[in-house]
Length: 110
Length: 113
Image 1: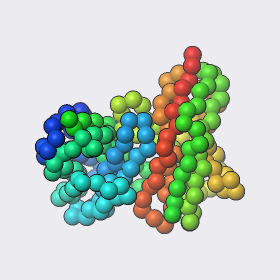
Image 2: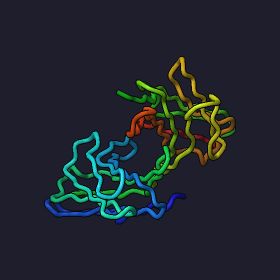
Image 3: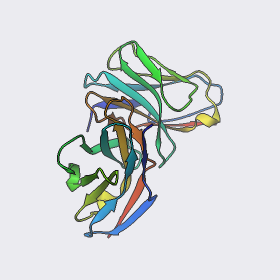
Image 4: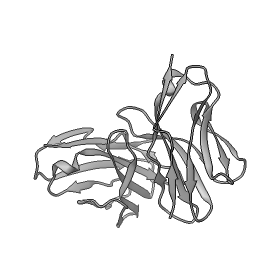
């Protein structure tokens, strides 16, 4: 198992709330990623980072933002959650070609 | 643009039988190809990759994959399936000169005892 952690694992919140999904890795990887995945479906890249102070938007339009102040930490923030944000969010990191994934955060917005 | 297709939503196989999960890809440059597995309520786990060299790549848990350049395919195989292999399998491709990895839609594998 790779050393990449996500908290919380499950979150149920009301519409309009601000939330931050945490992702940390202890492998010293420069590259990190956030994917959105509906249960049992394909992954969609929403944000990625080449390293500290580097963030880019992915292929899927997202109302979330990310930051990368430290190598090991790549949090994702939703300023105002909506029911359409209900999904699973997977964080990953890489040094070489393959990616190492965290266990995911399953978000439900009511 | 790069893309990957997994033509089967679901594959059913009896325990002990060989299994194949299909994947085809499209890239403009040299392909880097990957297989990942996802168990329920878990993130994806890397199984194997093809970069260059031998067309038959061996990976974790007894899985292997065969790269076929002429058919632009990278099918995942295992000689003898286990019930514990039941999971969601994702094929992924990256253009050798690029940064992004594109994932397929996934194939659900059911292995019956």
